[in-house]
Image (tube, rainbow, N blue to C red; front, side, top):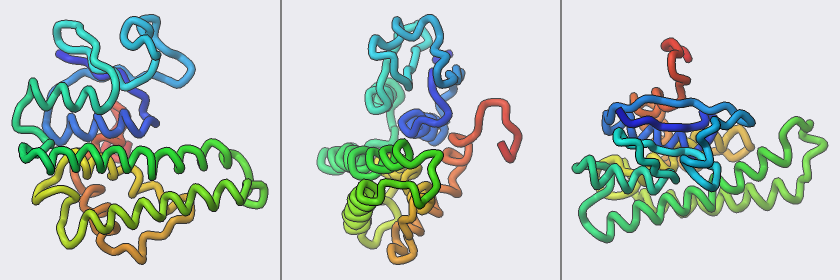
Length: 207
């Protein structure tokens, strides 16, 4: 069986876990602790980054989008639309989520972690929050009146935004004025694939 090497706290690893769960693709998990990479890490990925998918014939595939693209080919009828423009929009949404949401949120987390709000660099904080808010406005326009970001069904685009939508409020970004995105967040959070992606392997129902 294939194995996913991943961190529990990595948003890109989370996306791959959600994708695998959504498609019910069986796999073994190798959860790696930060600061304790396995001896085989360099062989799996010379960049020493996760996630890495090791196929059942022991071939490594690294990078969240590369893993998803690979699985879309070897496991057909996946979460990327066949229509070329819709397919492109899925990857555009993924890039937008990465650069416009995850990147500034990670930057806030790294610069503010462990500090009291009064000790934050407020200039940096406001700059990053504005970027997140502008990006959310774009996603709101992309969503329009639909339930999902691209087409009529859940796709890779929705999985890309699932984690950011869940964590923005902890950084002071309110979704109350964005009811469509708030509803999308709630739909995603209710899905089995997302719930399971948050659980550490072996954890119980509340894990």
